[in-house]
Amino acid sequence: MSKVIAFHQAVPGYLNATASGLELTLSIKGPQPDTLWVRSEPDNEETLTPMSSQDYQGEWASYKVVIPFETGHFQTRYLFKLVWSDRLLWCSALGLSTAMPENNHQFRYVPAGQVPGWVAEQVFYQIFPDRFANGDHSLTPAEGAYDYLQGQKTRQRQWGELPQSREGAIEFFGGDLHGIEQNLTYLQEELGVTALYLNPVFESRSNHKYDTTDYSSVDQHLGGDDALVQLSESIHQRGMRLILDAVINHTSVFHPWFQAALAGDEQARARYVFDDKGDYVSWKGHRSLPVLDFANKGNVETFISGEDSVVKHWLRPPFNIDGWRMDVIHMLGEGPGAYNNAHYVRMLRKAIKAENADAYLLGEHFFEATSWLQGDQEDAAMNYYGFGHPVRAFFTGLDIAYHPIQLDAADFANWLARARAVIPFAQLTAQLNQLDSHDTRRLITMLNGQVDLYLAAIGLLMTYIGTPCLYYGDELALPGEDDPDCRRCFPWDRAQWPEVVFETTRRWIAHRKALVSLQRGALVTLHAAGDVMIFARVLESEQCLIAVNRGDATAVLCPDDLLPMARSWRLVEGVAQLEEASSGWRIELAARSTNLWSR
Image (cartoon, rainbow, N blue to C red):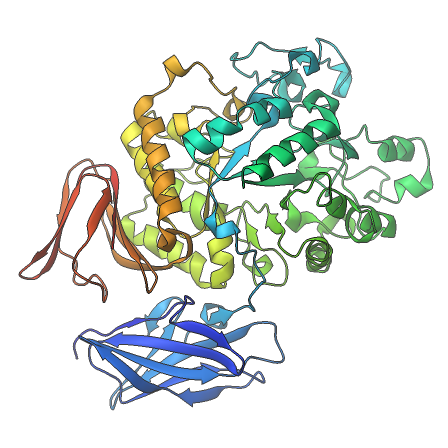
């Protein structure tokens, strides 16, 4: 039997929610099945509903059916079963298979409105406030302004000096919220980004501010509350968005609660986790970060459920932030082991959405976050597992721990596909994809300065499913080793900018914003072997074709099929050729490149 190709994803035209249920469409090329069913579990038991042929377009047949929404589960889950006289195939979110797919590979629908619709349209830009721009030099902490751990004193650095690992959290370069506001024209009009994600801005004695001393105030050295109000107003006047970083798993040792706990205040002590020996539990052993205990009702009210809780307060006027990035969200819980975590994340979701139904709830997970991304907890995660880890491995030959890894395009595509298959489509489009962050060695440094490979990765970032986010300086291939070197000052001397990196990044951002299929389209892998991966982003009204070649030589190949699309493609970005040949398609790709066509 010749090859069978089937296509279904949760995009308009293939999945439509109606009053009576979900209208599903499956398109099949090749030998058509004798019978075709959609398998669902409306009462946790299998139901097979027959599908009937509706339309033929060339070699493709489309089949439709309406299935009821599940009533016993917040998701509606389903598979397709294709049956011939002598065999059968299953079609799941992971593709076609002979064996019945696992439950976590079912297609799944989460009711509309579960993920803010605006997120998929954005290009985010992450800013570490102390290192982006100094807008008011008088705010910079003075040398020795205050003590930190073990009697360390604040150090004031000159802009552009390299961070010193021995200084850690106590060196300040003077970046502030005024500096961000003063450069909104650069960010929006020159670079093209549409949304900002800021590392923590609340009161703290460190430069990174993941050790909060006061959740009700913006740090005075960043400009205080007034500076955040002014920044938020300026951002929203431009039609941009703003999310902040919430650190509620732990506080600083200098937080008044913890100081009171050390002084013997039992009520304050009950807010924290202490072990059997009476010592406090700290985040990952960092003694500056005592862990909060959410078995304590006061913590739940202060941070989540109270009328003026932390997560509600900053969503309201005059601050009006558009969402939260929740630091180590998977570690929130009762006692030392994050017990009952899902309960508190659901509670977080309820509190945030009650305050602003359109707010973005983004969780930080350095590894797989599938269980948090099913529609009842987070809108999305920082997509280390489903994007950052595999992309870095594919381009650099190093995993997230910087151990050697050999990953060809087939392995790469399989890793990406398995990460996508277990998450509802709405959550996929909102995943925050990054090449770099404040916690990782910079990609250009991992690539030993190979700019062409770096730009190929930028192209992939802007075309892959999910919401792209640049880490400040990515548009200039700013280098950096491990923390704190990955937190260098932004280099504002434009004479030193690598023009090709800036201009290419700016073009990729423009393509992302102009092509709706890059924001909301299904993703279909068409070819993955050796150094080359080709995939499509598909909507009924628009399609894009993306080809990545990480190899050192020009790649020439002839894929079997490029989906049921028109034969006229426009090369949007890259150095490549796409033409119809006698045996199908012929594609030629420049070495170390990402290439984009649209129609």
